[in-house]
Length: 284
Image (cartoon, rainbow, N blue to C red; front, side, top):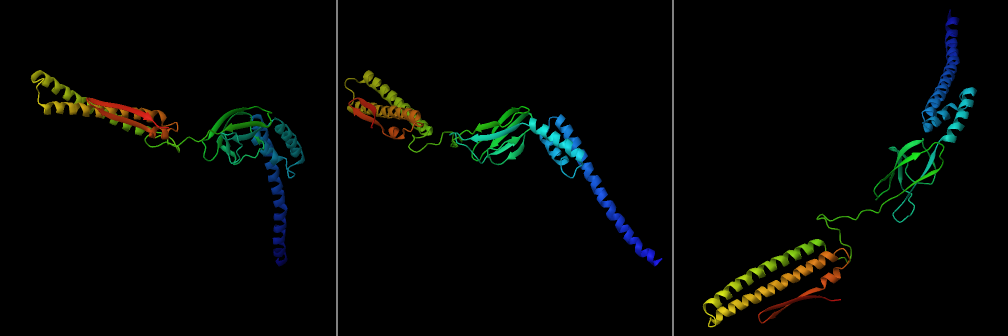
């Protein structure tokens, strides 16, 4: 009995080591057969990229010879009809870009462009190109079966210029004053013209009263008061007109780099005996 107990563990160990390799080989064979079956189904469905992956599994040396032979033959057929594309990208100046992420149907296929072809299933695909500092570009492409090394290239638009919070374009160096300056100057001109009209109408009403009541023997002080208000109205009106002209110039030249010209717009007002003379000019 003791001898039998000593021999039994060796028999069990030998049986275990004899069965394990067989189970592993059987499992490996099943993996190969399953991969070959899936490859056929994927090829028939037009999913050539996935079919290629399964054919690589069933074409290994570990697989049965018959399965290897069939998978190798199918692999040649799939590679012959599998389309390929070569993605490319340029900037707004026509220069090639390298650091570009490319996605096909939402799946990233490369993080940088190197000029190499990428296998893709036949059909309609959405290519998305992303580069730092530029707006992403999407391109919908119909890839045909058997089409090789098709170039799919895009051009990134130049970055949009930043905008100021008030909505005007950011002025460049040497550019004219922004439109808001034109609005403020124009508003001041309108107010000045309104004040001049008010003062002038008042002076005209008083002049009519003097002519109707005491002319030509009216008090000199009353006459001087009316004339002074005419002068004030004329001066204010001239300034208002000059401000409006300045506003127009600022508005028309703010985006043409004419700040220097606008800043040299000089309104002039000269008092006369019974009013003022207003004018404006540019200095070059």
